[in-house]
Length: 305
Image (cartoon, rainbow, N blue to C red; front, side, top):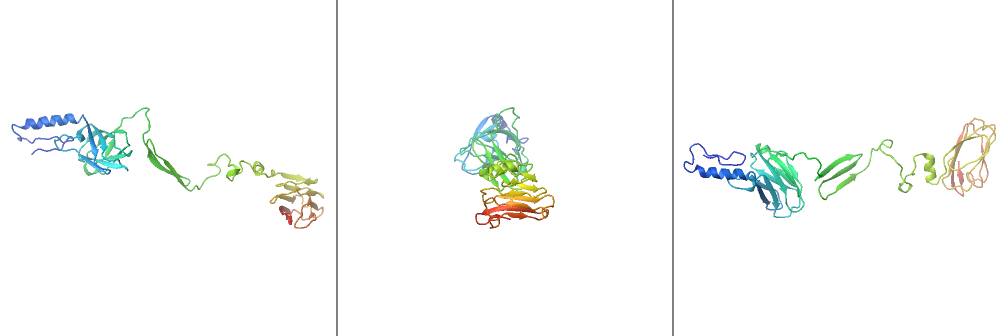
């Protein structure tokens, strides 16, 4: 009895069979061998997965070296094309000539598969290992050329990047919520004021960007007129500290007794036209080593201590 277990599904005549007629089968086999070097077309009958099976001892495009796959309908999603039987080990050059700009996935068994994007050609091998048969990419390594398909996925600091495969068209998508960012190693540059930042990399420049004067330490034993944001350390002696004129709500200054002599030689905080704690009187600072913060509230309260 003849068998068809070879990779081109040729008829193998058993010993003693087809006496006087074996030449016909042999001639058919020779024709099918030449088909193995030929070009052929197979059409997917619908917008669905398809199986193309090489028939026994019968001419068919699946026996050819170059197989062009078309579709009767426009494909709306990636479709699988299974090459059978799953025992055929063969080299193929396959073209995705389907309509609909979709990928076709070439498979043989439950093993590895190969994706071919619309308009592309891929040389591949079916290993013919039965139910677990795999498809292997056999494209030669090229120098130059172009990328025909890119797919991405990944997550960094809570932000995900997904998408693809992108061929001639397609998109990548960013999603998620940013988190766990190391501000010292993963952030550079400055954030504009309009975006909630200070457009600066140091505190004094930042204060100026948001219309506050620079924060400066003042060490003094002589009278001084303060500006918003100053930290003033007083030396020995009776010193007058004059608060800023025409303060804005939220302005603040800090005064500290730096020598521990305030109880003996007190300081005077001059209100400079604004009230201090709702009182139209200057403030006497007489606590050794104390530190006070004065914040301007409004015209009624003036400076809160």
